[in-house]
Length: 70
Image 1 (tube, rainbow, N blue to C red):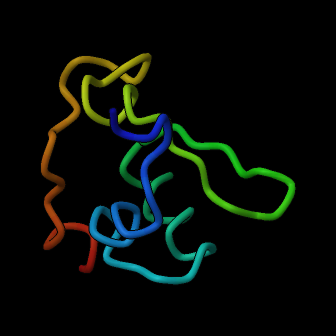
Image 2 (cartoon, helix red, strand yellow):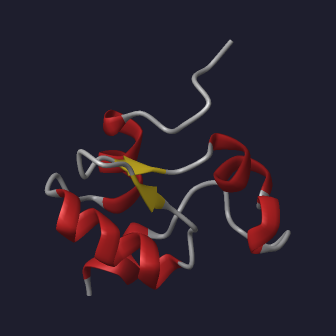
């Protein structure tokens, strides 16, 4: 069973960024809901990303990295 939250590797793939602050910026721009734990780790519930969760049903499974890096 996959972890409840996206892994750090998955966050790097989705955002194209390694630093947490940069990842948070990209996630906000993409409209992906996330939280930060007390250690500053970004938490994205897998269900929200994969199925759209409370974000809406039109969330793409594969983000458009070209539009993010612009």
